[in-house]
Amino acid sequence: MRVANLQLRIPFGRIAAGTVLMLGVLPLLLPLVWMVSTSVKPEFDVFLNPPQLIPVRVRWQNYVDVFVQTAYARQYLNSIYIAALTVAGTVCVSAPAGYALARLRFPGHAFVLPVLLSALLLPNEILIVPQYAFMSQLGLIGTQVPVVLEGVFGAPAVIATFLMRQFFLSLPKDLEDAGRVDGLSHFGVFFRIGLPLAGSALATMALLTFLASWNAYLEPLVFTSGIRDLITLPVALNSFTNIDGTPQYTLQMAATTLSILPIAIVFLLAQRHIVEGIARSGLKA
Image 1 (cartoon, one colour):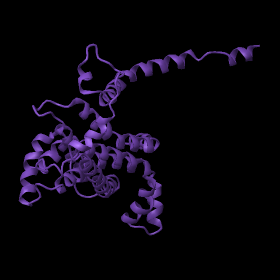
Image 2 (image 1 turned 60 degrees about the vertical axis):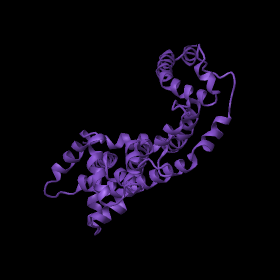
Image 3 (image 1 turned 120 degrees about the vertical axis):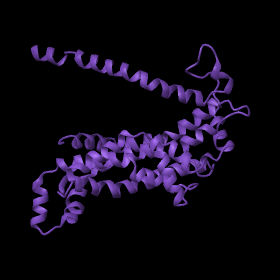
Image 4 (image 1 turned 90 degrees about the vertical axis):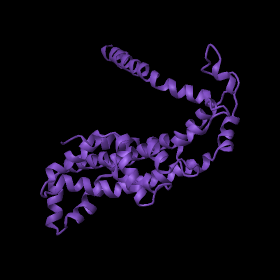
């Protein structure tokens, strides 16, 4: 009888915790639901009072108009391949840099990371001026090359380098010593031991870099000179306006809904690796 009572016991603690978590998530989900709802409304229904969370009339034509009124398909492609190039470049730069800061001892190594992290204190609005002057001297203004270079060597790369350093610090020193006994150089230890074990950290770094590149607004706007066929999605969202300059809210929400799909897909596919990477990267300072 006692065993039966234990089996029928209701886990009120878990139910209460789940309820609190769901209530905490609701404020985060409401803007997302409102965005999707607005994206399928007729323009006039956006201003109805009281507001309608669930649209009475559905207008799927908004998603078609997004591609008809602007070069949205081209701008979508721009965001995809710029983000892909930025991720690939950041992996090639930040992974070995993180290993070097974690395992190599060279003159001044203790000051390199603080100097890099201090660069994060400077806002992009200040850095964009010397960056623009430098890229202008190279003749790269009006192209997408500076957008990629800024992502690979800018603030997102510093965060990625720090993340990889923390991960390599968490690896047992015995693994490196075993590789050195087998005759591996530092490059050999990195490529044959460290990098294969860094899958979760690389996934986390790739997602954070992808997010930074995908959401970047100032750099694509400035470096591409606002050229329609070169800008990325965050800049393109401002192009959905009426003749008098007022925003077309339904088209903006439809374009925004489409723009978050790659982020959602990448996160869902790499969710387990991302959580593991963040957890392991914080094990050792």
